[in-house]
Image (cartoon, rainbow, N blue to C red):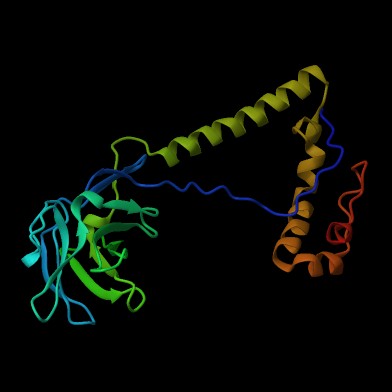
Length: 252
């Protein structure tokens, strides 16, 4: 059986899969688990923001924008004096963030007259499953004067439509389960027939797993209480290891 000279676990690390939604079209993106497809959304018109501008959004098809003379427009803004502005060209659409958490559809439009500042629009895509309502809210500029306009879409079409078959997460769980079974069963067979082990000694790395709760405890103390917690606990890891590590030394 392999001996572990010394092991320090100061924290439990959970690897979380985070995946960008890859753009397929101006209103559709894909992850390994499925797609977000906005193509069934209607066009939104005359959505008033706090500055009393009227905003039009066409998610999937280009449209002209008022008196600007511009085409390929997705988001058009009109002032109360009937002056229109391009706040988002369809071709500039890009998906930012993670599906189900902070997915945003972002656009860039024209420069502000006489400056190099680009008009921008960001639409937060909020999944509302089992709803028949598509609601677009215009919140105005992110910061006054920055011409970065914020919207929120609440819609069932903002939800991820799973791919048929197993998702990537399911495949990873299956692989993890198989790996654990191979480790346990293979390790027990090896120790039994090649080392002559019996009883609990057949458990692979038994000494380590026996002390695992204590290692986790010390790691959690350090993680949530920092060096103060480590100094207060002043505990040694298992004396079964050849090298004894005092948590106080880690913080010196």
